[in-house]
Length: 502
Image 1 (spheres, rainbow, N blue to C red):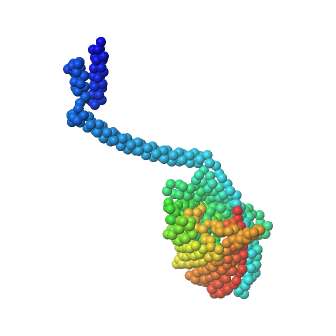
Image 2 (cartoon, helix red, strand yellow):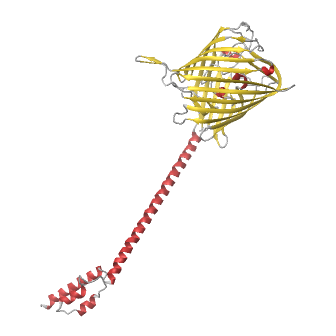
Image 3 (cartoon, helix red, strand yellow):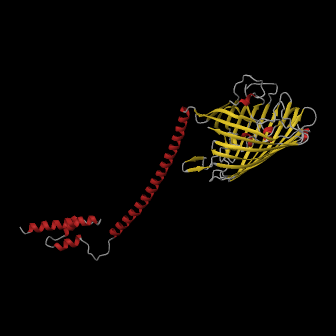
């Protein structure tokens, strides 16, 4: 009976020894230890199965430690590799997501283009002029039958317009005149339709070409000419601009610019001498015009949206007339009045005009100038070279600046001016709007044709009630030489305009 408990105890001790050996990865043979142990000697079994605490690690233990360390090192390598792989996959997934989003936006844009229709905005312009001949040189015939030197009130411009955009890349404009002055020169009671001014459609963002426009619109030539009348500084464009640049004509043109819009260019082909009223050929003088314009803006202050700008440009305009007749003449810087200089009808097959543009906006100060040189190719005799130029200076007393558009509707041009504070008179507040002082000198030289020279000095101010409402005042002092129509003359005109649009 005493042997059975002892045997059980020995078995349990042996079993614990085997477990400990296996944990330590010690390969002690349990059966051998049990067989060699004396049943009466418990200590011998324990000694056989459990190594002494003071003993040196066995080779199997060293190998175990090394394996653990190797495993740990390998695990670290695998973790780093996994982290790198995960990071790479995450970046790849993010890139793919960004690309998919961009593709989706592009796809959405094209979906929008396929469904977008015309969006049309109606507008109009009203310009009411009053001109007073404060002093008329006695040599000027005040009752000249063509355009007498008399005081007058007139609607300079009375127009309705429709502007539209559609399908993402198209725009159009239709502008009709209603002003009575459009029928001047016709017998009283003559029935006419409203003049067609702008009538065109454009397609934008064409690869390599940019913008292509077809219809009736401004010929791309000259900075002052392509700037809208409601955004020019003076009531009328300068004398040389009126002489050497082309107005709106029927044709096709291409406009484009660099990505940063610092360089822009335009070129076009047009039919000359199309009636504004009938938009049809009215005589044999329906020639061809070819134009080109290149602009560079070396300075444009981005943070201030162009409050500091330097604009330069060069252009060329060639006109080939079918009837071989050219006439150059000008009145003072008003819409109606006697022609103070006139070349008469010249027998010329063509003429070519080159121009240089310069403008600088430096905060409230603007300096703008253009020079023109025209070669008239006479049918008989040598070609004749005539020229003209203007320069003007303006200053905003209230601190605003002229708005420059590097690539506007007609290329490089000046835009609409917005006062810091609109003119208002309400209880508790009174604002005067924006005030601009201005001065201009214009020059036209027809001496090579023995027709004299014309100089014009204009001084005045503009009062901006809002970005679309303003009052202009010009004092105009034309000076002509002895070879002009009325000889050497000097006169003074006072002109004012109420100008608003919507």
